Image 1 (cartoon, each protein chain N blue to C red):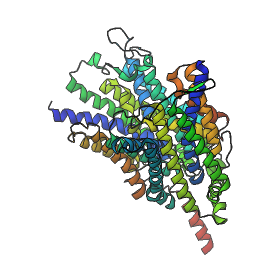
Image 2 (cartoon, chains in turn cyan, red; image 1 turned 135 degrees about the vertical axis):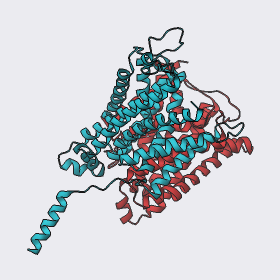
Image 3 (cartoon, rainbow over the protein chains, first blue to last red; image 1 turned 30 degrees about the horizontal axis):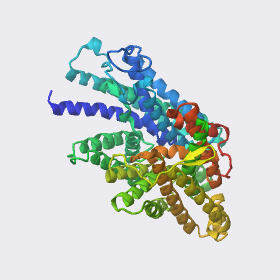
Image 4 (spheres, rainbow over the protein chains, first blue to last red; image 1 turned 180 degrees about the vertical axis):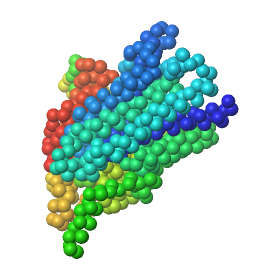
Length: 331
Length: 292
């Protein structure tokens, strides 16, 4: 396989992973109005738990220290990863979703992000600290025995399937009574509670499901690159997803999909091969992050609804009542 | 001298740094009613400005401290004028305004990285001599930090209680609408608040840099949630609450370093933050309309 084809197939996998992440963020931020400023932490927790569930017991040879080491097959490991991310989301929600303004939730998420990052780095027994875990077996390849090139295509199919299922679910949630309620709470929590909607419970569902999406995306990434360390989930990654969602169109799952293609895939990859400035290796990544931060602000100023805006809700019942009223007035 | 007593000493120093930062954040939140997530970067830039002034331009350390503090005040004022005020005037929802400051924090932290590079730098005060006060032993720079914080807090108290502008700030913190109909020029007060908040952030960044002896472009951002912990513990929007919160968080983190393990200093601040949110989300000093 030529390097170009290999590169492009890799991008397809990344695109799927980013699509899942952006949908999860869209459920939290776009649909429910939950400001989770450390979305990437849930991604990382999902990735770590998937990874350590697939690895065998840590031994002296591998020179790594980590928990679990269960030697489980990928689907079960992914389930564990998704559950771990969901549980962390639940814990954060328990503190921050109860009767607090959105600032406080954001503060709690920022703090949780900093603490988890610190904790994973300091407690090397968890996920091997700053070095991270590596050597995670390729999902299903112990029975498939594919060569690396063919395996990439298999992995595209695997992530594609997961993406399809989670995508359908995301659209389904958005159009369901649950999605409608979440949007109502986002617009005005007081009005929603006046109609008997328990905003805490509904927002908690969005929080947990969104974090499960992040966890699955993290698990899929770990299955693909077979390693994860703290350098891979710094705060900048969360910004990237926010930029993707806002540019594509928050509250619109097609917009989230478009954003996942435009920002983390197209923009990141297009700037990845810019020439390095000798002696200043950090300059290009820094400029790239400045552009992402600037993009976030620019989108909010020039087109806060994004490229594909959220469709305005139509209420057939209201139209019917208006018509009836008009007919009565004429009559 | 006992280790615990010394940890109380360290706690007082951390509390001094934290008080400067927390009061600056809390004042701005009180008046504008939204959190500035780029505040940590204000600290970072303040420290780097002081470093450039003293190392590259060979200014006296104390003079560069004053100049960098003032520059940060003007910087915050301009940021509000050019970026945040246009957004608030447009009537952008709170959720988006927070994302704007969040995006700004990424922009500023990487701007710092691009300008000053990733290496460790340090700000040194001349003539470090140990001074003994009862059970405590402080270096000259540590005493300077405590002194700066004490003077700043005293000046703030006078500003808030004795001057027209300080009283107007407190009025706006209670209710912007009521302040406006009593004839307060809310635009001017908001500008002044950003100026003050920027100065305090810059000064806090400089003394934090002196205290931790060497710093990198992400040090302010990493300190942000400790500031949050102090602000929320004290009661968001209340400057006196922020001072109290800073004292509690400063002492708790430094004493836990001795009693538990210094690796878990930040976790103690985090635990206090979570406990406050669970038990008393309005903080020690309650401000109407700022919490729930």
